[in-house]
Image (cartoon, rainbow, N blue to C red; front, side, top):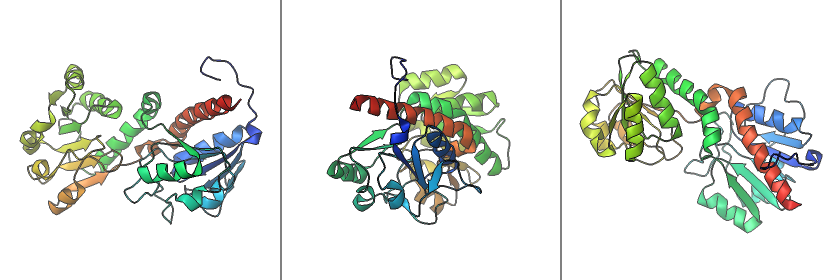
Length: 305
C-alpha cells in the first residue's frame, strides 16, 4: 500500500535485498522479505538450523551486498568504531566504501541510524540512507519487548524485588515513558529524571516522582537502580559515586549511551548495557520492523515510477 492506501503494482521479484548484521530479529525480517518474492541474501546474524526459506546465506557482508538494491542494517546504533550491531557474529562488520561499492545503483540502505563515516561513503557512492530509529510508531510496536527485556535484566542482576525498590528512569521519550508506566504498575518507588518539563509532568501523572537532571546527584543515595534511555552522557561520576554499593545500572540507549561506563567500572558498580532489547521477542519485533521497512521500500519504488 502507498500512503493513500492504494495497492501498489510492484514486482518484488526484480528486487535484491541484503540483510546484514543484527540478531534473531533479522531472521524474521529476512523471512518476510523473501516471502515477497524478492531475492534475499543474508550475513552477520544468527543463522537458524535448516536455514530460512528463500534466503541465501552469503560468505561475508560484501558478498551479501553485491548487486543489492536495498540493504537492511539493524536498528541498534552503530558503535564508536563504526561496527554494525551484530552481537553473535564472529567478526566485526564495519561497512566501508569497498563493501558498499558493489550495490546496484541507485542503492538504498534502511537502518536505525547512520554515523558520519557511513554517510560519507553513501554520498561518494550515490547510496541513500533511510533512518528509522526515531519512528515513534515502530518504537511503540517493539516497546513492550524492550520493557520485558529490561525487566529480565533487572530480575537477573538484583537480590531484591522490583516491587518497593527505588528506581530512577533517566529520559522520558517513547521507551522511557513505557518503562515508567510498567515500573509504577509493578509497585516500584519510581523516579523520573528528564529535561523536558512536560515529560516530567506526564511522569508525575503516571504516579512517578519527577526530577530535573540536575537533581540526580542528590537523589542517587536513595536509589536501588538507574535505567537510562538517553543516548548522551547524562549520568556521570558525580552521580555514580553517590549511589549505594548494591545499585544496578542499566543502559538501554544507543551509543554512546547515557551512563559513564568507565566510571561505573572504577566504582565497582554493577552495569549492564542492555542494547537491542527488542531481541526479547524476535518474531514479534522483527515483524514490526519489517512493516516499517516494507513501507519504505514501497515508497522508494513508487517514487521511481
